Amino acid sequence: MLHSESRRPPLFCDGPIRFSTVYAGGTSKYAFDGSGAVMRDKDNHSLCTFKTGKRYNADLSASYNIGGRYLVRELLKACPETEASEARAKVPGLSARATCTLSTYISLLAVTAKA
Image (cartoon, rainbow, N blue to C red; front, side, top):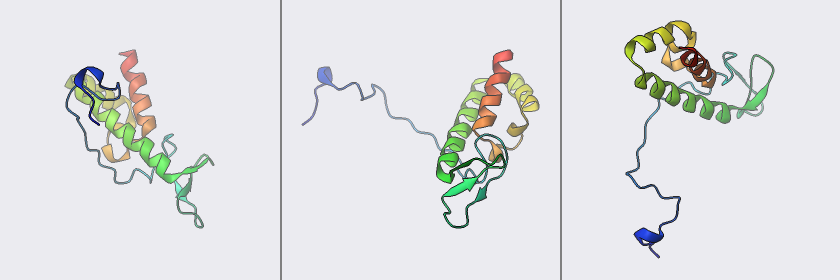
């Protein structure tokens, strides 16, 4: 049964659906907390251990990092180039986009909030 325009449920958006692609390569290799590369569990490959000793699901960490990469890109795209280059100088994880994690985005937010 189709909903009429006046009785449309609130879950539907009014505009066209938009999507964005994010390069997901290597996202499960790095910890989302910024502690560096993770070690996969030998018995259960879906688990990983961060350098801090925390154990997480590798796919969960990867999805956080994919979201972080997207948010970093959108935030830098909205900034003027001078501010973006200053942020790249202050946040070391921004130099190589392939190593961006969720913690890189959090650090970028802290830098842009001070500016």
